[in-house]
Image 1 (cartoon, rainbow, N blue to C red):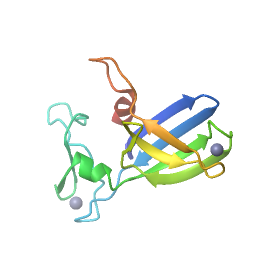
Image 2 (cartoon, rainbow, N blue to C red):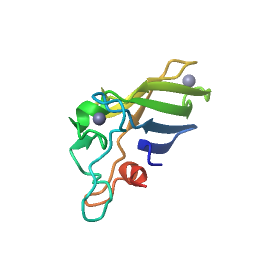
Image 3 (spheres, rainbow, N blue to C red):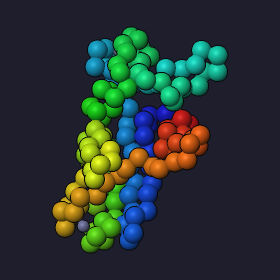
Image 4 (tube, rainbow, N blue to C red):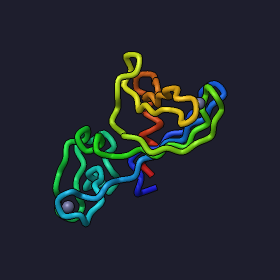
Length: 134
Ligand SMILES: [Zn+2]
Ligand SMILES: [Zn+2]
């Protein structure tokens, strides 16, 4: 799981979505995989960090700018036509009905399928990010 920035599994009506995003190589040295900075005390990644750091050269990129360059791998069962497909789409969140979401199109019926951020109660841990922590 160390190579993954984001992972989520959803069930939507008749459909299913699994989406994951791999870490990308540092654009400066092309050696290190960009990662969240680690807490010097615990050695665990700081999942709330606002930046990503290259472990090889220490090049730092703002979290959102970095994530916008990543590609999301999606395996889905279309909630509309039940087509089963795989697609690679931009991880950049788009606005979908007023909510930020990764949006992709069913390859068969062309319906737009959003992967929104999960709704959560205040103080609750974000499942998506918790999964990437391992
Ligand atoms: Zn680097
Ligand atoms: Zn479809």
